[in-house]
Amino acid sequence: MTQQEEEASQEAPWWRSRGLPLLPPAAKWLAVLVIASLMVPALTSQWSDRQKELDVKNALVSQITRSAATATQDAYTLVEDEAQSAMIKDPLWRSEYRSILKEWRVAAFTLQSELQAYFPSATLGSSSLLMAFHNYNNVVQQYIRLSGDECADNRQWVVNAIYSKYLHKHPWRVIANNPPGITPNPACWKKSEEFRQSYQDLGENLLGRRKDLVQAVIGSSAAGFNVGFRDFVHQVLPFF
Image (cartoon, rainbow, N blue to C red; front, top):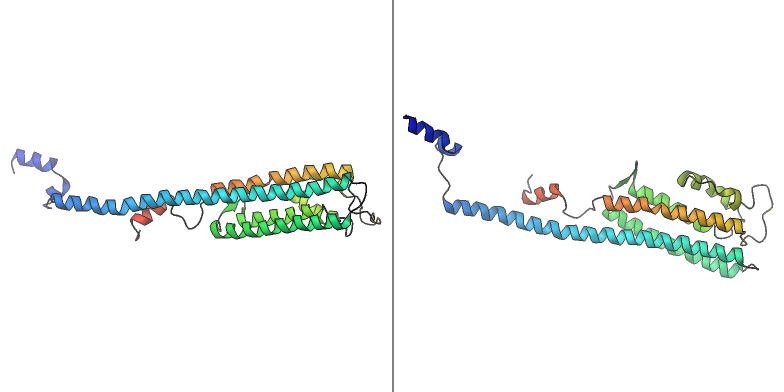
């Protein structure tokens, strides 16, 4: 082999140096078309699914925020009315109390179902997002119950441990109007001004904890959507 042939061999692509034939132009175009036929639909699907995932997240964030805000605010309004009222109106307050609790329970059940469908593997700290919402739901229900006839069964002492653990707050010196061993006040719907102030503070702290749930939803990937590089590769190369 002459020096010119050796130089040409070194400069030639590896497939030519091994005696492999060059692809004809038609084959090159065919390869480009095959790749494009796989990548373009995958990119389109990625863009479409990303928008759908964002819509799901926005809807869930709005639901969590609206439902938690409505429940805590309505319960506080009931307590505020109780604290300012000059007389006890059991039937009216009991009807309002049941309505608030029912509305939150329905909203919580709907949210839990959607979290189960779209974020079954999402986490919040060391717990699953589903368990975190389950705990939040329980505490909101206990908060609403405190707006009612909490003297009847010393309920404030039952929820004390739940709130102190969940919110790291200890507001019960003013909320616990009837400690165990003391005959409950017959006017259990009547709330003191101290109770109202403490209840408002507790509600604001509880509402603030919803941000943890919201951030977990925003930062997690929703199931059922093709988003991210791994999903893109799997769409282009299903066998990969």
